[in-house]
Length: 184
Image 1 (cartoon, rainbow, N blue to C red):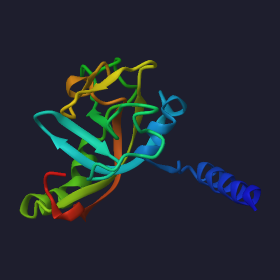
Image 2 (image 1 turned 90 degrees about the horizontal axis):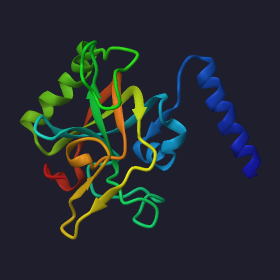
Image 3 (image 1 turned 180 degrees about the vertical axis):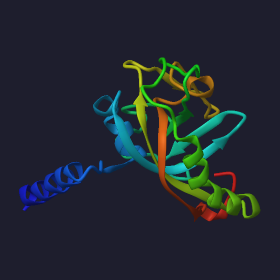
Image 4 (image 1 turned 120 degrees about the horizontal axis):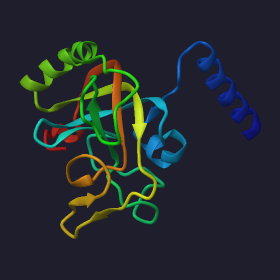
């Protein structure tokens, strides 16, 4: 029974690749297998967090639910990936990308959900991005007693284990935040 499920999953992934579609990963899947995806173009779905002051991130969810397997016994990382866009001449961590971000299309995809979020802060944005995953081997991220993260990763204070250099956005829609709390 288990082999047939594995075979069916493998066939589905291969069919998606043959049809030119990569499978969409969750933030948890990316962080659990960060070495496997490092340096590759991936498609990842998550909840947009952050803003102009500290930068945008893609989180697993709008709450503090950790991914199973990424708890403090394995990694002391926030369950989020730092985001950045690239255009020729931009200065981004770990050097230039081999592509320019489709910023106009990304803005277009996000515009509707952003309008809703501005008028109704109890809503967040779930988005699917395509981009190059960057992560340095041996990243060290510490968590303080107060719950703050800092390290030699990406984003503000080096607190994120990976950086997704955005190539494009596939889809975005509004979601009700956990408990309707705009601070999540």
